[in-house]
Every structure is written in structure tokens, then in C-alpha cells.
Image (cartoon, rainbow, N blue to C red; front, side, top):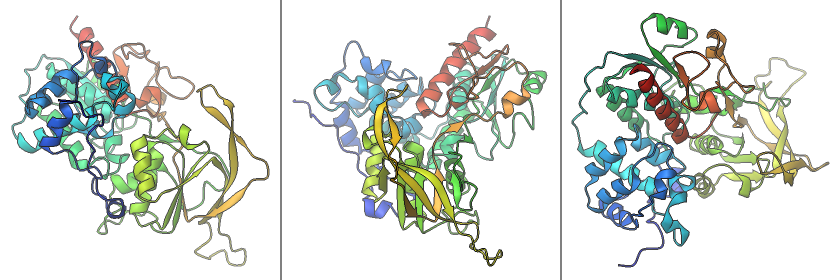
Length: 468
């Protein structure tokens, strides 16, 4: 049977429909389509796709099970390496990782590995109700700071080996960036909750509303009897441009904007979480977070949404799929432009005018691409005299985040780099004995799967250290 040169399309909600709801955009494969997609796999002997996966999922073996329609068998193979398969199948950039190594991709489109992983995980969650068996305790205790992808992965790997694991989460819901940062239409929160419940069934204890550095310190965790600590606290400190007008009402960091919508459910009519809806919105940035913020603003009722990015479409760092979805939904990409000022209303004759201090627009300057910078991308250069204004009512800054300094400031001897990232060795060990770290707390904002990879590395190192 000849191989289909193209991967099977992922069915989605129609753009004109999904732009007005928060239901998941991608609808998932049917069983028949999943089997057909799996049959495109060449089952290469050298398995290049595995080398592209930060958590080393045995991709050919799980796809072989999919070819046989043994979906539970496929899930079991995936879950040996990944604690969050339903999450990864939705939000990982497979096109630059496992699928970029696929041999079939040399001549045709690569196998839809991420779509198959999602299908296997969803099939398991819908059809298997028995919780996994809790392993026998090995008598060792480990504390995890943060319940994002790195923390949950580290916790899951250790729990499977019998460790007594406690995860401390600062917010009221476990999941970290998976629940506060990624919108419902890309990653339903019920999916995250299901993955967390699976870890709890393995014996992982999740303690919410605990801010490490305030409620408890790292030193106090050791005093309480924990033998090792993994810091997976993420990068929740938003970056700003330091341009005039950033303190005006109606200016949000992407973190705040998305947290209000995702975790505090501002999109629901029965919730009282304050957030600006309607009008025109400018989102500054070009990454996945910018796409999420722009598409969220649209669903909250914005009449017009601009993405302002200082480079061209070719340099846009967001996933191509997310960019295409945003374009289909009517987001206006204002490329090769950079903000220089956020404009606000001021009535000098009436200081009590309720409109005072609110955003009325954003002033930008046109850019052109010059020579490549240190990252290899062409450096954007301002074009003198090209400034212009856009009328907007809301501005969302989505230009990156940094690790929160709270843990560093309350933990003696913990070394960080100039950007605030915790310094670790190749095993995830910090400058403090028995304290490990990984994910965005180390690297700054990065991908879910890279954070999971760091959690796996640290879990292996912790196990080796405590079993000596």
C-alpha cells in the first residue's frame, strides 16, 4: 500500500464559530483516522524521532500499537516516559522536535506523532477508569516546589519508584502554567486535572496555597524531614518594555491577562473577576503566549485585535499552527512595528473624569530588518520618522517572563545567573546540597516538554543520590 504523503488533517471548529467560544479548537482524530495515520510510520531501525523527544518516549513502539488499534497498549508505552501525555499531545511543538527527526519527513510530511499521542491519552482517559496502583513506599521523602510541567514530571517519576512526594503549589489549583497560562481552547483544564489526579493515585500529595519562600522556606522543608527538594517554580515574573504609559489602566502583562481569564474564569458571565472586554486590543509580542492572549481577547468580545511584533512573519517564534489559527480567526498581524508609547486619556479640566488614566491608543514605529543578532535572527532597526498611532482600549504585554526572585532571596547559597535563573549542573543539582531545579525556573520561559525533560533528569539524579 503506498504511503500517504500528507499527514491526516486534524479536524477543528470552524473559525467563525470558535472565535466566539472557549471550547477546544482541535477536535481530535477518530479511531479509524488514528490507525491510518499510524500506518504511515516507517518503523525505522535507528528511531530518529526518539532523539527529538526531550522525555525520550518510545515513539515507534507506541505507534506500532496504534497500527494494531491497541490504544491502551500505546498509552502504557507513552506513560512510561511521560507523566502528562494528554497535555503534551496538545501543546508540545512536535514540528521542531520528534516530528522534525521523522525519516518520512525527508520526502513527505512527517508522521503526526503529537496527534497520535493525544489520541492515545484521550482514549485511555475516556475508556479506562481504574486508577494506577500505588507503588510500595521506599521510605524516602522528596519535596517539589511548583506544580507545573517540570514539577509534576519529577513528582510522577519519583512516585513510580516509591518515593513519598509532596508538591507545593502557590496558587489554589495544581497545574502551574498549564492552568493559568494556556487557554481552555488550547488545553482544557479538565485534561490537566485528570493528569494531576493520576499522579495523586500514585501517592503524590499536592498542597495548594503554599508559597515557598513565604509560607515555608527551603530550609524548613529539610527541617520537616525531606531529603531532597526540586524547584520547579517556573518563570512568572512578567517583563515590560519600560516605555511611557505602561502604568495606565488597561495595560496588562500577558500573565495577568491570561490568569484572569483561565484560572479565575473571567470569560464566564457568572464570575466577577475584573477584566477589560470589548473594544480594540493590542498584544505586543510574537510567541505562543502572544497568540494565546490575542485569541483570548477576541473570545472575550474584542472588536479588533492587533498583534504588534517587531520582526517579520518569518521570524515569528510562535508555533505555525497557532499563527494559522489566529489568522483564520481574524487577528490582525501588525508586523515590523514596535511600540514606543502607550497613550492615555487625561481631562485637565476635571480630575474626577472617570475616563482619566485609561488607555486610548498605542504609538508605534516601523522597523526594518538589519544584520543578524546573537540569536541568529536579523536585528530589527527603527525607521526614523515612521511613527503612527493605533486606537486601542487595552494593551497586553507578551514579551517574556523571568523567574520570580522569591526563592532565591529566601534560600542562602542558591546561585542564579544574571537573568535570575537558578544555576544547575547537567543533573539539575543547584549550588545547594540536595536541592535540584529545572524548567523555566532555570531557563526562563521555554516549552512545556523541555520543562518536563528537566524534571525527568532531576528525578533520576535524586533517585541515584538517595539510593546510595
